[in-house]
Image (tube, rainbow, N blue to C red; front, side, top):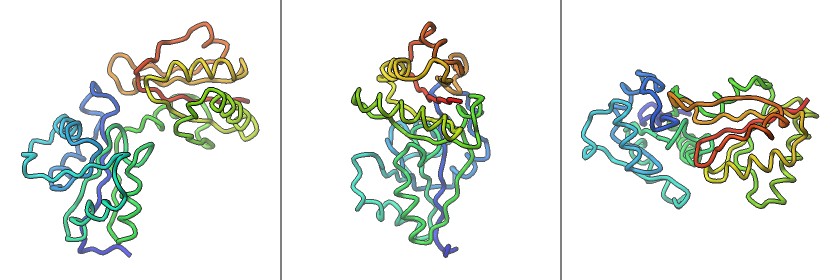
Length: 240
């Protein structure tokens, strides 16, 4: 049960790109954020910069920031949410896009539910959903795989598996890669997928000038390979 005397855990989406337009984040979010004194973030410095871009004008010295990232020990989670147990609202802010989607925040949300803390997701951009929306692929049956294996052999096998799964289940396959390995993943897709399989490359989503979202067969991409090095990209494949 939700305890009304406890604070609320707000899930705060952030910009997908440092140069995204300010309007990408709904103006109503900042009215909520201004009332929050406690934040859980991946990186304090970048979180403060992101909040400033959203229009947060308050003094950061009066706010408390706890860092949650891959180095965080799970035993620290109760301390992060202690303010909510005492009646204070907390904001969980991602580095890019919505918290908890391809993001470490889910452990905090899970703990909040276990303690009867109300969880409220705020509206904002999601690169995964925006890419799917714009891909022209099946939006009713899809799966997000996160990161594919780094090892070349394992990655090739995984690509063939999900391509076959797409064909058998009429299912869009969505995945991402660390930006500096994007070109290697693209080469692996071109080597392992059938020429008729559709590949959508969604790059720099919400960037005002360099955004590219394009769905074409593998045979097209073999002759028109974009340079995706160090760019935020969502990959989608669909085989019929």
